[in-house]
Amino acid sequence: MNDEEIVGLAMKNGFLIDRDAVNIIKNFSDKREIDQVIKRAGKFLKDSDVVITPDHINDVCELENKTDLRIRYDTNVCKGEYEEFTDMFIDRYRRLGKILKRRLPASAIKNVKKRGGGSDIFVVGMVSNIQKTRNGHKIVEIEDETDLMSVLLPKGSDVIKEDLLLDEVIGVKGSIKGGQRNILIADTIFRPDLPINRERLRSHGKIGLTSDLHVGSVTFKEDSWKRFVRFLQRDEEVAGDLDCIIVAGDVVDGIGIYPNQERELSIKNIFDQYREVANLMEDIPSDIKVVISPGNHDAVRQAEPQPPFPEKIRDFFPERFKFVGNPCYIEINGVNVLSYHGRSLDDIIQNIPGSSYNDPVSAMTQLLKRRHLSPIYGGRVAMSPGEKDLLLMEDVPDIFHCGHVHTLGIGRYSGTLIVNSAGWQEQTSFQRERNIEPDVAKFPVIDLESMGIKILDFGG
Ligand SMILES: [Fe+2]
Image (cartoon, rainbow, N blue to C red; front, side):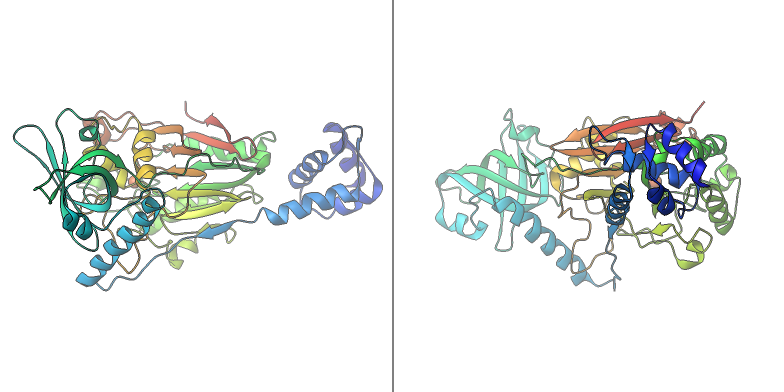
């Protein structure tokens, strides 16, 4: 752009710009970027100012440098030994137990059993068995590192309504009747949960969340996706301000993921599927950062945590794209986004009464309460065991993002924004059989300053 055009662009945005600022701004690559810098510089103007100076431009650049992403994920190599599972569960107990013990004056189960009768007894343990009795009570076995004990959830009580899951770590307050040392009668159940009264963080910029393109399937909505990318190229108001797009897995439909899948594939080679995704994504404007993690349809190991795409696949994509593992913490402008594909939502929906594919937010809330991305062991999620339980949610996310279930969900729980980003695939035969009506081509954009959310619709 020449000087005059830059001055004109500034005026269009309602600002004047001095000659030195024009000289700096000339070095930026294209009109779109220059327009953005002007808009952002405008935000640094004091009330009575209208002239953008080099100082304002420098402020923008400084802020831009600070917006760099910080990405954190961890994958392990499992040797397949039994001890790895034991280590993983011990680690889970210790770290989730620690969160609970900060709030509860818990005693070791061994000591509680030794002491015998009493009330207001607190213990922290991992659920190892759940049984219903003939007369309508529930008996739950919990275990800590010293011993195990039975917890009675009396019929008709509030605690029996708690949806306890095998392998979750809970705190129990209750009483023991004299002579029944092994049975704690529960009156309150505690979960690790998110801390309350979190300070609202201050940030800036915008991020977009998406997932589940399923490219290669005949049901992938290619026209909607193309409309979306065109929007990113042209729109100034929303897309022009977008710092980053996070893609939470299932970018392709994959091969051999479910029986007779080949009948529903338009691209039958896995590498061709990825080549096509790369084509469809490469026109996303280069100033928007793109972070991609895998899901259960992608060509990486199924066991979670899943590693990033292998180099052979990454090479199809523009170099600026970032490939991460599943799950992944993505810190952007100080906001902590936990992005997880969401396979375990199948287990939650199956095991917690009242959950459904139409309400991903409540299933995701169940994960937040348990501070674990896959609390049930032995369900749909294959876990790669190791010294540490890598699906444990040690850090509290500001935004919790999943996909996988193909229904759009927006909610808030205890200061965390919950988003399920649905997908770009029309109803499949699998979904038809189960009465699941997917949300298609909806794109949630979050304003990190206000934590407000806007849903853009590219369907139709
Ligand atoms: Fe999935």
